[in-house]
Amino acid sequence: MKAKTRQNPRKTRGGLPPSAINGCHNNTAGPVLNLMVCQIRSLIWSALVLASLMPAGIQTIRAAGGDTIPAAGSETSAAEGAPAVDANDLQAKVDAIVQPLVDGHTNLGVAVGLIRQDQTLVSGYGQVVYGVNRRPDADTVYEIGSISKVFTGTLLAWFVQTGRLALDDPAETLLPDSVRVPAYETRKITLQDLSSHVSGLPRMPTNFAPRDPYNPYADYGEDDLYRFLSGHTLRRRPGETYEYSNLGAGLLGAALARKSGMTYEQLLIERICAPLGMDSTRIALTPAMRRRLAPPYTTHGYWKLRIFLPDSNWDIPTLAGAGGIRSTVNDLLKFLAANLGPIQTDLQAAGDLARQERFKISDTMSIGLGWHIFHFPDFAEPIYWHNGGTGGYRTFMGFLRQQRLAVVLLSNTQSSVDGAALDLLRALKSP
Image 1 (cartoon, rainbow, N blue to C red):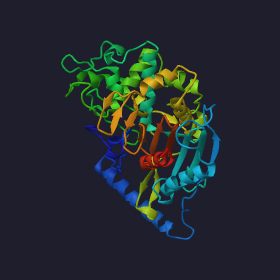
Image 2: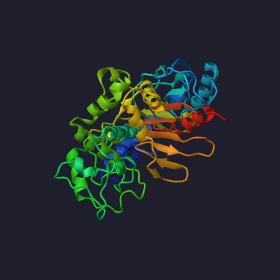
Image 3: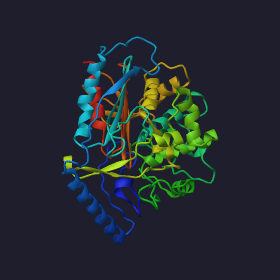
Image 4: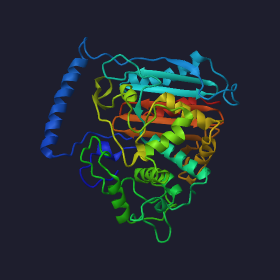
């Protein structure tokens, strides 16, 4: 991200990323406060390192295992593709890939869900709360970060499939008349441009200057968004260059909400969550979700001396479509099952549209509406995927549609789970 003032690189540089960010603490509230914070953290670090070396110190984070449950939305026998795998063997493959994340003290806890033909498995590893011997499960709540962009792209596809909008509609048509959306010569920014990150808009608006760097999006309002758009000049023609943009995806979510006459959360619930039975996918935490929320953590130190320090939750009201959703493994498996199809809702056509390639980024990656698409030589079909990251969370979901293979990994630690997710897909796909 590119914030001009009061920027915290750990918090705002990589918020809602398309790839994992390894940031560092950098409280820029002032030099005196910086010094005090560093001294306090140094004392905490020293005390916890000493405690970790004592026999009665902090317990090593270890847990594994999971439960096999019927595949969400599956009423058919095993699909063509990868052969059926014994449940114990499936569990062993998942354990071998995910358990090292907690054994190596990289992630405090990881919740994993996967669909493999007519099998669904959910496993929890590590801890939900540091020092408390309780594993995450299918209903543990996480901030999913930029995975939200896939939901925003699917909402756009729903509007298009139902004839309410067109992909080439200019974004400005959904905003107040007083807002000037920048154009390049005569080329205007379209809704598709926003969803596919080719709008020409920057990653973040230049007037993004959070008062609280530990909850950086909370005070960025609709007026701030409109003020930036009206004063911005595009550097390139929309539709020609991929530039990942939290701003663009957030603007798209806000525009679709305005078109619907609802908030983004109300639109999300009505068009995706309710039809799929996703009762724990929201922007604002319900009381029940808050009780199941995995608190966020950042890591400090190295390997067995690494400790987990509490981080802050992020509230993203205006740019919610870019990264404001909270969800669970259970709910995201329902969404993935809907993308694997078939489903008996109007989301079937929307999902099909959202997955269509819109722009080629490189020889191995392209993008649809929200979905990034890998084209790897050792995979016989594309991988549809997105990851996410907020202050103390890292997430990934992706699938191979022909093989009916899907994975979701959610962690409440600022350490990437992308590699483990791709390893799972690679280990479980057909030869």
